[in-house]
Image (cartoon, rainbow, N blue to C red; front, side, top):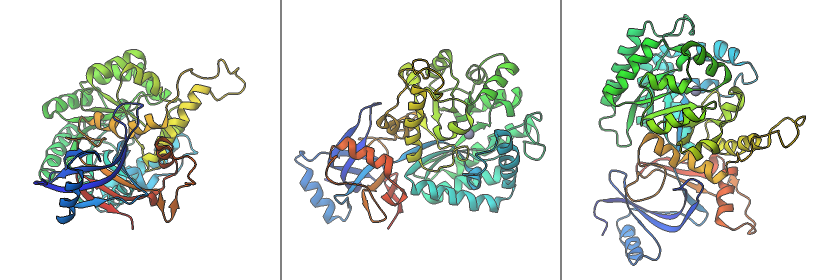
Length: 456
Ligand SMILES: [Zn+2]
């Protein structure tokens, strides 16, 4: 019965297949093959349930959760600046100008040193995996070799990684000591990076993928942006950038190009099925339509937005329009490597958008009506929304999907969640897990059917 099955997982699952709808699967069996793909999901009522447990026990391939443990799908972080990990939590009280020019750019310039890169990247990937992030989309720096180190860190730690060598060639908007040497070199380096990542990933089960990465329109010349658009087409590559993040950026693009970020990125050939754009706080209805037509997704970064975006992403409005949205930590504009923290902030920010924040304004005019996002909706963004953004079968436990799991223990010795047999409904239990779990509650992380992390 279990031919070609590598593992049988037995336990209860929380997941959300449809935006806003929570699903709880009680003590199911998840059958996973040697490629890490879910071959079957067996419910308790199924006649083969007991025989499968028996056979899996005999073959020593049963992974059984205890009563206080639950499976969640692995989280998908769509926006991380890996080189900024040493800056996490730093200078967030300063202006964007100080944050960027005194901290970020000097820090990113240090990644000309491959050994430094290797040390930071390995530490970051380990930290993300330990927080249940099984797939991550990263900006590296302009440096070719050290950006490859990030790919290697993903491979070595078993994480599914999407990595971009950053392009920033506009001499007017980048510091002398940190930019591409020329437009032509930036384009050649991008192609070489794509080829090298494809080679590195040839035998990597969980996959590593190159991403075309213009930092954002201000830091790139039109020539570079057009050139990158052509490279995207040639390699059918993933693309990431920032789009309409804050007032300054949004207005800069309008005055330089006479159109919105979205229109400009589309004109350059950078929007498509495999495009993920960070922030997008200032998208208008027409921009949302372009996202829909091209299949582009948003990486919502709610913690970072609270510091630097001057606005809250209107998640509810964009979801109603049909735009796909996933979540990003945006290290280090966001201080936290945890998508749990960002799930909470999705909800909190949406409430502030709905209610408004200035008590001098009457409550009828203070906020934007009908803007709330629920915690179950935010959970969707961190899982299925991310999978859809990457166009991969990720984010839910279902036949044909990739088996990425976190094992959550609500009775973890250093972080026991309050459970006094009062709020026993499953939705309350998930809410408790999402709001109160710490790194101590994440006992195991499995990526593509392989155990990559264990917290004993
Ligand atoms: Zn960013």
